[in-house]
Length: 331
Image (cartoon, rainbow, N blue to C red; front, top):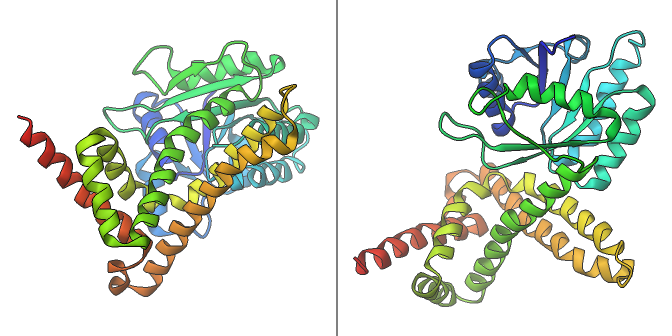
């Protein structure tokens, strides 16, 4: 049977953007989500993205494909929710389950083990890039076990549209096997978000030592590492509101590194853990920022001139101005 109905759980910034792209480019598809006790803004975002809001039981019953895209810490819990619904519908052909979260191959294996007894086709996915816009498509990498390669091709055909610009931007990791897409996501996110986390940590430490140290750091970067200063000056404002999501992702990266390096004959698990704990530290950096962001929200406008979020945003604003000044001086 052709794929006609696709569910997206849940329509955060990325999920909603992918739904919107499908709604515009593949209008014949029915797009579902399930939102209970959510804010009006979330419901409106889902609706404007072409998503129909239905109870989870109806979503599972009607969907040919379920795409899970949510904070990585919630990935396994969603699988259990879906399985609970399916346990009451044993005669129903199960949907294809695509996990597109920032999770480690170890978590992929955990999800696969939960789905396997129910013969639910499982596709591993990893999304690289910012949310989709009219002019930009993030790339979605897919991989699967040999048993589900046929279903993976069906998914690619249905939501990829067969050619560039006709659906989502999908690339299959041929012969990568289950977990390959998530491993790639861990590597990419580990560098990309890890760089932002490391820069945040150093800026906060410099400012804690003295504002003069932070100003000198900014000045030196503007002269000798202009491109780097521009990168994290642009990334800090976008990151602070998403820091809570990055906590789980950094821990998944840590798990990935630990498992991958432990497989080497010359590395002990303890040695691998010491290296992998780099990303546990970065998880704590993002947790600090997320906590400060929540504290600011609870305290109101007056708190926004103090705290670690304020320090990062101030550094970013000064950094952008410094980059412009340096480039103008070279013209």
